[in-house]
Length: 236
Image 1 (cartoon, helix red, strand yellow):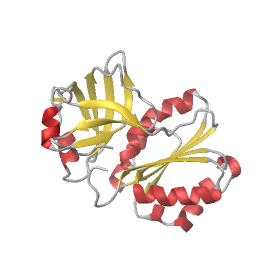
Image 2 (cartoon, one colour; image 1 turned 135 degrees about the vertical axis):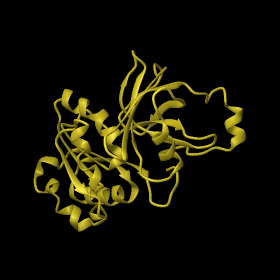
Image 3 (cartoon, rainbow, N blue to C red; image 1 turned 120 degrees about the vertical axis):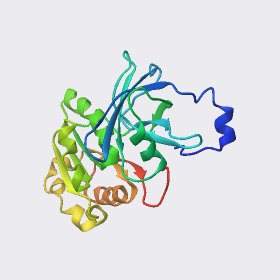
């Protein structure tokens, strides 16, 4: 997905990339997790589970974020941001306040949800909370059996509850999800209930890769994965 473009290209498409959304309100779920409600013309956007919107964070930089909630009739879109470093994206969204305007591009990406499968499993971190929030209503409305696993920093351990998520387990972000043997001993694998589940893995690339490998060896379910960030790589 796009993360930056040359300034001359940005200038060339300035009319297309002009501000099209206004910040209605903001709130901090924790010191690192900020939710922003935008309003604009989202009538033509395709909000599939796993799709993301491109948001402009500078003249040449763009970042991808998944809508946590949307209402096309009202033109409302909620996005949850992980404010964690001095990166251009974090700084930009940390600074946004009610009344500010920004650019939100169309949604596109990779589908992560198969409604035909009864059991649904989701794994992610702080960057995945918005996707989890958008997925929850579908899981409940379609009467799925579902489970969320999150690896989170200590200061964010209460965020899933504060966001209204259900059936979740929070694990400390300490590198455990880079250990195949440790993953293989998770409660997930102690029952046959999840053998043929739909698995959606998102967030840190390394954690997703290792978890995916274990699932491929231990289950017969469909595994969908999407890395959102990788240590040392900007604008993944």
